[in-house]
Structures are given as structure tokens and as C-alpha cells.
Amino acid sequence: MCILCSQLFNEIHWSDRQLTPELITRGGGEAGRRQGRQIRTRLVERVLAHYHLDVSDDWSATNYVVANRKGGHQVVSSLAELWQAAGKMAGQNLDPLDDTLLEHLSDSGHER
Amino acid sequence: MRSSRRDVCVLAGFLGSGKTTLLARYLQERGGTGVAVLINEYGAIGVDHHMVQRVEERTILLEGGCACCSRREELAAALRQLVELDHGDELLSVREVLIETSGLADPVPILFTLMSDPVLRHQLGAASVVVTLDALGGASQIEQHAEIRKQIIAADRVVITKADLADRLTIENCRIRIRRLNPTAKIVVSVLGDAFGVLAPDSDLGHAGDLVKAYGQDFAMETSPHRDVRSTALTFNGPLDWAAFSVWLSMLLQARGPDVLRIKGLLDIGDAGPVVLNVAQHVVHPPDHLPVWPVGERRSYLTVITRQIDPGRIARSMETFQRAGGRAGFRVHALS
Image 1: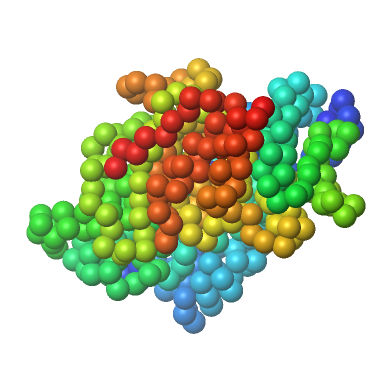
Image 2 (image 1 turned 120 degrees about the vertical axis):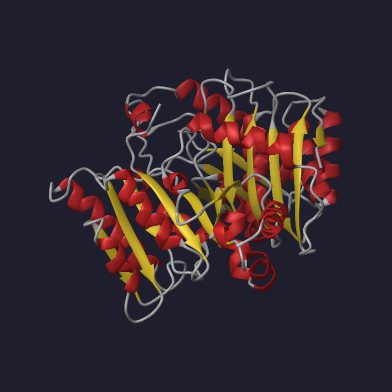
């Protein structure tokens, strides 16, 4: 349980660097966690745009909300769950080795 | 800094490859205090149990199947029982847990069981995998049995056993076959279990040092004769962005998990020390953030072992994700 936001952490994902249950309980590392989280969410957003999907953080920046353009959405708690949920919404396996996705990421990088 | 969690070692290896000899020797030499042993026997009577019990009282025997499939829940239950006994003062404090698997077991589902269990993942540290391989029959067993290839790919340390029965060429042949499948595993040669020290918990720095050494010495290997299995070593022209890397890796494992057999490396993420990364199929060990670099220059190394995936595609994909994550000039170079 984080003392700052009362959010219950039942699992620390491997991508949350240097976080421990003890640190979270003390409310430590929150600024760094949110910063890393923001960078991750921005990149996921660009990836999912290729599949006409969107992603955002919930209020506590501990869950992701994946949405499609028909108004459907799903709340997930980790990157692993996110790719699963997004794959179901897109109706296809989201493959980071897919050449068209890589071209999209390269092109959208130039537009920024 | 050592974690307060118990160290776990999974000991795998084909039938008759010398697992019990190594284990018994380790327990004899170490004295047995603070070590708990779980033995998974495939068969009606767990003969090995009786051999080990003489030197280690805290042995729990899992009978009737492979730890990787039918007995996964039982393995978790047995480990929970160990942890509970420890808390109840019925045992002296357990610092190490050794799991000897049946000869056919794939270590990866065992790692998954340990890491996904809500109780065990807080009580046990990341498990290391030690695999025994018989020096005489090892090279041909690798060719013939997919189970052995899986074990070697999942291994952190491989012990070539019964070295007194084989000549130097045969042992070297074994070593080459192991290297082709797993370029970063530490390989040791053993006679009558005298390499028992590989079962001891690794120090973090020693482990990272082994990795760097493996890259320095052995990476110019020809590709595996198992054409569907390919390995490559990558390095980068600068620190990588951890957030972008975690997005890329999580997506890769979701899409291609069964075919990404192993990812292992030391990563420069711009901190004072590197991150030690160890992935076996869909199981990601919690990355270890070291305070300093172990030896030599500050440089990232990443080994990727894949099945039916061109390693060049992995490199291109990773580079694209890093650039998209804000590292504009990031480049991935193949070392092999």
C-alpha cells in the first residue's frame, strides 16, 4: 500500500526499476516512478496509434486504460496485460518485429 | 547487497547425468545447515531421496511426475510448506532452497511457478538454474533430446560431469555444443561431484563478471546446428533508455515469448552501475541494478537466443523503439 495515494500494489512489475515493497510503503521513489511511467505511456501511445488504439494512465498512474475508437476500453495493471488487452481489441497479435509498425514508429518520430 | 529472500537453485539434467552426486557432495561439504532440498522424482519410488536424506534432514520429496507440468502446484505447495515451517521455528532458518528436478523437466515453468506464486515471490529470490550433462553421452544427448536443449538454454551454469571417464576431445566437444546453444552460461567440468560449488548462491558481481568474460572469450562461435535456434550478441553505442526498453521487451515477450528462448545481459541505462537482465521465455527475473560496473569498460551486452526468428530483426526493432523513445542516435551493433 502506498501511503501517498492509498493505492494497493499487489505486484511490482519488473519494468519499475529499483522499486521495492518497502520503498513504496514509505511513499518513496514516487516522483521517479511517475516520470518513468510517463515516458513509457507516451511510447506505448505511439505504438498503439498504429493499431488505431489509445492508451492513458489512470489517476494514480498505476493502471493503464486501453481504448478503441468505438468507445470500448479496458483497465490493466501491467505492460504484459496491456499488450494482451490491446491485441484483443485490435483483433491481431501486436508484434514489435512487424516492419510496418517499425516504419510507423520511425515516421511518427520525424513528425514530432 | 544481499536480499533477505531465500536463495533458490534449480538443479536440472538428464537421467543419470550426476545431479544427485553433485547435490550430495554440496550438502556434505557445506554442512547442510540452512539448506532445504526438494526432490522431484519421476517414478513410483523416490530412490534419490534416501541418498540425500542421510546428509540433509530437511528434504521434501515430490513424487509421481515432472516438476514442469503435472506437479507444478505441488512444487509451489511444498515450497510454501517449507516457508511456513521456517516461520514456525520447526526448522532452523532456511537460507537456501535447492530443487532437484526429474530428468525430463523444463526449468522455465518451474521459474514461472516460483515467480507467479503470491506467497513465494516475496519469500524466495530469483532462482538460478544449474544443469548437469554427462561428458560421455552429452554431445549426442543434446542432438537427440529437445528436453536437454531446453535445459541448457535455460541454464546459468552447466556442469560437464563424469569428466574422468571421457578424454579431452570429448569434453571439448560437449563444451562447444553447450556454447552453441547458450553463449553466456558458465561451464565447469566435474569429477565425482567436485564442482559442487556451482550450487552455491552467486554473488551479484561475480555473476556479472562471468557474463562479461563469456562475451570476451566465446562469442565468435559458429551458429547452432539446430537451425531453428539462433543466438546473437548485441552491444550499443550509448546508454539505453530503460522506459523504452521495457516497452519493447514486454511487447516482444507477449508476441513472441515461446520463441524468445533466452535474453541475458548487462545494460548501461545511464546509472552508476549496470542492470543485469535475465529472461527465460516469458519469465523475466526482476532486473538487478548493480551499484558499480564489475570489470572492464562500461559497455552494454545483450545475448538473445531465439527460435525461428532472425536476430537481425530483433536488433532493428530494438533500435527503432529506442529512437522512438527519445534516443535519436541510438545504434545496435552485432558482436557475432
